Length: 266
Ligand SMILES: Nc1ncnc2c1ncn2[C@@H]1O[C@H](COP(=O)(O)OP(=O)(O)O)[C@@H](O)[C@H]1O
Ligand SMILES: [Mg+2]
Image (cartoon, rainbow, N blue to C red; front, top):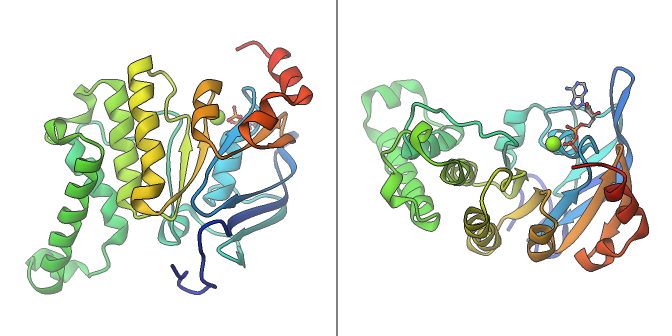
């Protein structure tokens, strides 16, 4: 795989690195001097008690927030100030802590919406629906159908998402992110609010995504069992500071991590 303007990226290479990044909102330091990296093909969990700075970190990675300090390097290139749609163009997609779908639209159309970022042809062709735009639309449909098959949501493809159970809404949202063909997928609590069966389903899809689509995942998740099962490496934040970084087993037995979790009611 070769980045458009960067060096080749192969499995195990560092895809994204965060170096000494700090972000404040007025007086609140959401993230303080945090450094870690994400390697190609891994599932990298970001965990920590509520208010630890996890969502802020994802918003920094996808360019929604610009940190006051630090450097973010994606595919070997230090990144300048960017906007979220630059992130999508550059191969980063995300799902949200609270489902953010077009509620009146069908599952199919929501996933198709993820493709609009890939639409390159001009409006003229799209209105005529001929020539290059038609070929492109066929290609989009094909990709979307493939994602629908992968996520096993054929039966609900024509259902407005507002009528779907929560677990399936989250799955549609994953589908929309995949439709952007990301290299890096950011998942903010993809299993929050799910029952055990829904969690097991979602875990299986998350495990399969990297193999099937060649992606890399940054995952925020509260359920420690899920984190232990899914992730290759875990970074732990507490009050905006990185307190641990390692394999799930290393992190689980780390005293600072145990203290951080005991100190905060969930
Ligand atoms: N847009 C914002 N404006 C002001 N404060 C914010 C904003 N986003 C997050 N914060 C604050 O930053 C800290 C980290 O929040 P967040 O990243 O959402 O934590 P987490 O996702 O780990 O629960 C919290 O103290 C939160 O109140
Ligand atoms: Mg959060």
